Image (cartoon, rainbow, N blue to C red; front, top):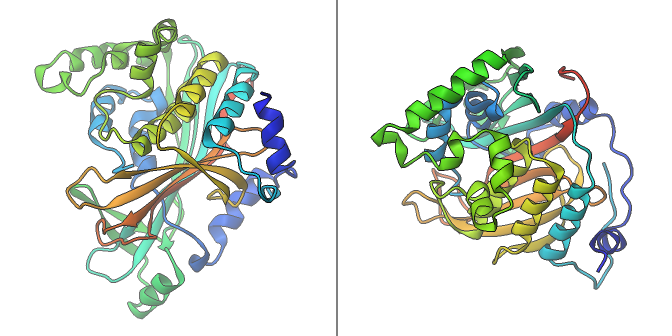
Length: 371
C-alpha cells in the first residue's frame, strides 16, 4: 500500500503557506476571543532544557521528568472516505525516511498555556516563541533564541471579564506548586550559545547528578547518553521504545505516549531513519484515532491524530491530546491538549490546556538566526 499516495487522495493538495512571520504576527495580533490557550510554561521548561542546547541541561533533565501532561489552507477529506491514524502515521514515516540530514536541527515554534488568573474569574493564554539550533557535531556551538509574547484573555467571555476587572496588564497564574506572572507586552529576544566545551561539561555534570541516589529514579539510562550513542541502540526495538517512551515519564496512557512521541519528533536531532522509526512505533499505539481535518495554533490546516488519558494529579479530569500533521508533507505542525471530562485547575470540558504551533522542526544547512 502506498500510504503517501492514499493520504494525498483523501486530503488533497495544500496551497503554499503565507510567509512564516505573517502567520505568527497575524495570529498573535488577532482578537483575543478568537484564540485558544496553550501549555503551561513550555518555553520556560524548554528554555531550561534547551532541547539539549543549554548548559543547565543536567538539572533540567531530572526536573522535566517530574513535569508532564496529565497529556496555509487545505481541502477537506473526501466524503465517505476516512483514513485510519495508522495509515496517516505510516505515510509520515515514509516521508520522514526520505528527508535529508543537515548541519543543525532547528526547532522554531510558538507555545503557551491557558491558566486561570489567581483571584479572578477569567482565563488567559500566555504564549512564547522559541527558535533553537542544535548542531549535528559536538564541535559546533548550539544557539537558542526565545522571547515571551503578550498574554491575553483566552476567549471572548474571558475578555469581557478582564475588561470588567479594569483590563490589568499583568496576571498571576498557578504553575504546579508555584505562580508565574505574565504581562500584556512582548518580551525582548534573548540569545544563548553553548560551546563544545560547555556541552562536554554539561554531559559530565548530568552523569554525576544521575549517579545520586535521590535522582537516579528520574534519570533513565538514555539521559546519560550522547545522541550518537542513542542512535546505535535504536536498532533494538525494546531499547528504542525506552528512548521514545522513557520509563520515568509520568503517565502511561496512549495520550501520554503520543505526546512523548511528539516531543521526540520535534526535539531530538535524530537521523531520518530514526524519525521514520518513531512514526512507525506511534502507528502501532492502541487507542489512537484520526480526527480528520483540524487547524494548528497558527491557522494552518492539518490532519489530527488523537488519544485520551487521565490527568496525572488527583483531579480525576480526562483530557484529549492531539498531534497535528501537515496533509502534504506529513511533518508535525502542532499539538493540543483539551479537557474532555471533569475539571482541572478550574478549567472544565472544552478548555484548552495547551496548544503549540511548529513552524519548523527539521534539519537545515543554514547558519543560526531567528526570523
